[in-house]
Amino acid sequence: SALSSLFKSLISPILTYGCQIWLPGSKAISNIISKHRLDSTLDLKAVAKMSMEQVHLRHLKYLLGINRRACNSTAWGETGSLPLVINCTHLCIKFFKRISSMNSTSLVKAALGEQIRLNLSWYNNIKSLIEEFDNIAPTQLNRNTSEILNANAL
Image 1 (cartoon, one colour):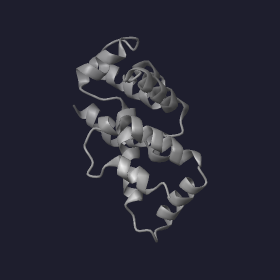
Image 2 (cartoon, one colour):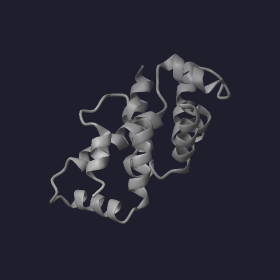
Image 3 (cartoon, rainbow, N blue to C red):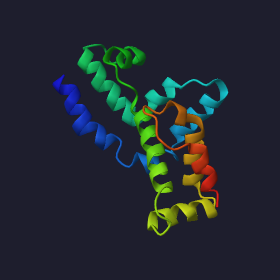
């Protein structure tokens, strides 16, 4: 529908802006990763508590004409939408792979090298994110992530 297209083109980019940087270190994604490690499921309650997903769910429920307290899974399922965090996870993994494949003279590649050398949090968090969720990214990427992580371990 038109409202769905407007949301995807105008609102979603604002909600997910810069997620490649902030998502790996967010408390919500840490909780989601912990839950996934325990039982290999995606903790939809934790996902629904993320502020960007609250906006997304409110929009989906409005489109469906259902009460805002209706089941979140119903909103995702009936509209065929995935939680925004899944797309953000895919963007994070894609971003990391793009940086990893850059020329070694690139400033961004050098910054990644410093992240690894100094054992800084972004690299450790993105590594955890990739180890848990690369296999469920919406599209398959060309390079094997474990090879990239090992190659970047300087």
